Structure formats: C-alpha cells, structure tokens
Amino acid sequence: MNLWDGDHRRLAAEFAEFDAENPAVYQYFIRFSREVKSRGHARYSAYAVMHRIRWFVAIETTAEDFKINNNWGPFYARKLMREYPAEFEGFFELRQMKHSAA
Image 1 (spheres, rainbow, N blue to C red):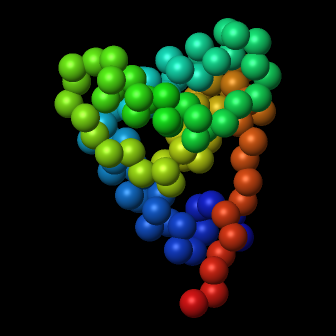
Image 2: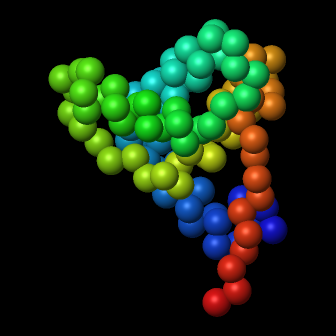
C-alpha cells in the first residue's frame, strides 16, 4: 500500500490543509533543499530539512513560530520532487508507508 491509499488519505488531507495554511514552510523547504544540494549532496534527508526549518524559524528569525508535524517531511519531499523534477529527482529517498491492520 502506498502513501496515498487507505488510512493515508486522511494524512494527505491534513498535510494539504497545513501546507495551504503555512505556505512559508514549503518555501523554506525549497530554499534549504537547494542550499544542501548546492553544497554537493546528491541525496539528503527530508527530516533534516524539516529540522533546519524549525531551527531557522525559532532561532534565526522573528517570525511567528509554528509546529511542523514530522509526518509532513515525506509529503514535502514528494511535492518538491514532483514540482522540480529536473532539479530534485531522486534527491530524497522515498519509502512506502506500511498499512497497519487495526
């Protein structure tokens, strides 16, 4: 089962809502991913980029702090690679989320 199936549709909808309400997060994700890539990294961690965003907003700016769910990292990685395929294809390792039988 992939990220967009079954129970993961709810998570995808929650991400879409967060993304729409917090467009600056994606802009930071793009910015910091480009920064990492410009330093010669062929692959990198979406979670590390997310943590960089947290640091930047909390420590380096006077912007209002916001909470970023760790679940959003894979969504931002997929969005970035989908929107900028020539620049970021294969930059983040993508994994399928396992469907848990409850």
